[in-house]
Image 1 (cartoon, rainbow, N blue to C red):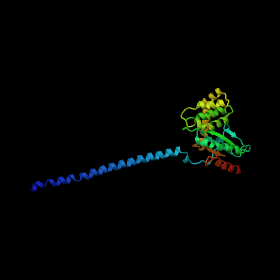
Image 2 (cartoon, rainbow, N blue to C red; image 1 turned 30 degrees about the horizontal axis):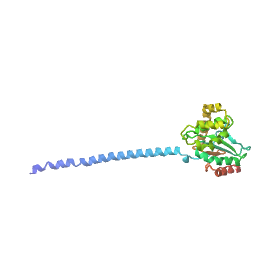
Image 3 (cartoon, rainbow, N blue to C red; image 1 turned 90 degrees about the vertical axis):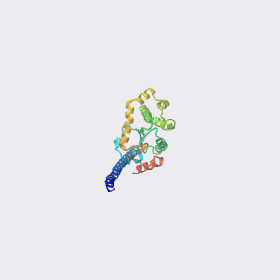
Image 4 (tube, rainbow, N blue to C red; image 1 turned 180 degrees about the horizontal axis):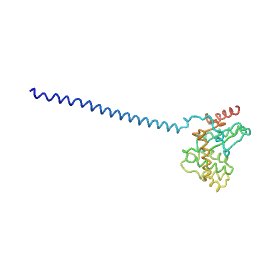
Length: 245
């Protein structure tokens, strides 16, 4: 009987240590997987945050000023000119932008109330998310080539609700506006399609980006970016301050 019990003791001693070792290895692998997954999640969250920050106008740091040479160019469209040149208001706009359309009545009231007291300049800033914003800007520039920029400017904003936010090409609509304004249609259509017109629109947009424009409408008053609501009252207060300064 003693000889049959002796082998069973060592057998038990050799098998027991192997079980904890297996658990330890499995635990280590699970820990590494968890750490790796956490790293991937953190990377994705960071990437999303960076993209949102870049894409969102609300998170952009306001600019303190813009170089005068790039704010108003020799060929910039001046709707009003003040003899003393004391106050210049520059608007970067997108003709298809609903916010620009909402600001338009207040802008026109401001221009009326301060006629002869401020220089008012309009610059193109078509946004990539708007199907017809670039074409509308080209139509305005083509009209400008025939001395009808302001007329087309009014047409585009006053009719924005009928053509804006559409995924269809509205070139024919803009050509109809040109006919109503009595433009030379052959010249108008050639100018809309020309590389010179595209370059002219892009030049405005490039200056806007350099000045810190991230959305529309964006206003500058004497080179300082306007930070308030683009309402008549907000713009009026800023203009009054500039005139008093």
